[in-house]
Image (cartoon, rainbow, N blue to C red; front, side):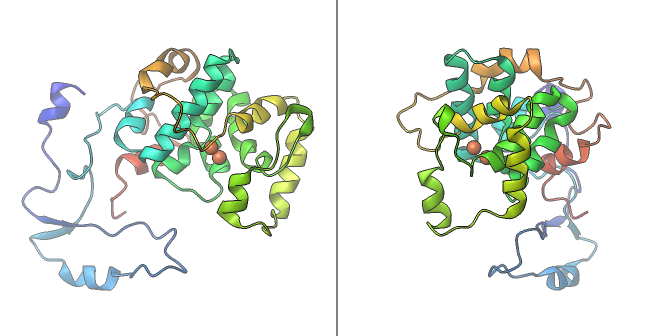
Length: 246
Ligand SMILES: [Fe+2]
Ligand SMILES: [Fe+2]
């Protein structure tokens, strides 16, 4: 954060800024869609929010990866990703695996949970080795498929999350099968081996502990994530300004 970032004025000053959250995830819930009511509130003193929301930590104008961890992602996702990566690092795994562990659920941080492996892989693809993006994409499907040869069993937690009778959808079984025959299978499989949720006994991991791995393996764009014109820049911008009306 530079002084310039601290002094930057908040946008749309002097007016009430209405927030209309993104619709993905409303259907089938008791969320009340109030778009029509909000539209009626518009007047010269009231606008739909665009740009920085002062209720959120301010992001620098050229945000880097760890700034999203610190200022945007939910606590459980941050802890989960940091612990996964640190355990892989402590076990001496290759840095590609450590980075894949650090990023494997990144879309859950503050973008989208459904099909998170696919979203996460796409989000990071312009900035990482293709093997890392592959591991992130396929960890989602491989989590459902045991591999006794490496000591990976279907997670007990999934019985709790989804019920003992949950049927894994065909597309995930198909993609897991594809991953299993791929030369990078063990990279994706390693992510599933470090993908543990019950980590209360693990010491707190500070994001800085992964800085070296990130510096060597994640291409931070000079313009900042969200502003480099990459095919996924819009996804990073959505996390910077999650409350933009459009
Ligand atoms: Fe995951
Ligand atoms: Fe995970």
